[in-house]
Length: 320
Ligand SMILES: [Zn+2]
Image (tube, rainbow, N blue to C red; front, side, top):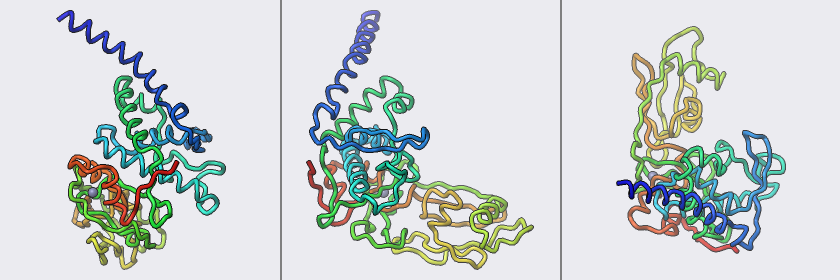
């Protein structure tokens, strides 16, 4: 018994000493000659930092996907993240800068999320940090230089958390512009453990939010009744597209935003207690579905097959 404790303690000490050395050894500055540096705006600290691309990618994968996901899923996420940032860096003045002088922001509302090693340690604890960091680092290194292109052009690889098994959406149905590689596809092995959620919004809450967000909406002042609200048009995948609120049309995307719903795949069930909303999945539903990626990886698909499944007609190439 005592021996076991001593051996475990020794192992932990070895891990603490050995793994940081391994991390340094694997650092991109030492193994990469590409030298691409990302200028990243840290929105909480209101400052710009310059980070080697492959280091930046570790922070994105850590922020955007659970480290417990299979290796092929983490690789798919790493390639999507690399493609995303290089697309923005290559776009120059054409894209609205998220912050003057920065290529990207770490704010998930504007760009892909990113967290620092310090934040990873806070989230995972010291030992969890070493285990997860090295796993993510392996995924980034194994896909070094890989980017996604469509007909020779680097793509905008949008992704979302979960389609809930409903399949992904056409970009044209969600954002009103057609993108040939962002088409609705099936998501046969979506691994979201809880795709369906239900929320009850009181009439006051619905009225308050809709009035606050869009003054033009005719929600009668002084009344405590739920506004008349129903889905009047659906997308090709069966998700709500247009919703009528007291006779006024708004898009399902806008309603999702106003009411803070998890997805546009919702059912509206008005009742005496308020508006019950059932949602399936989480996120805008376009492009790569992260829980679907997990499912495909668990079924033995590699990251290239996975990316080609979610981005129609693309190729994965190595950019040195
Ligand atoms: Zn899915």
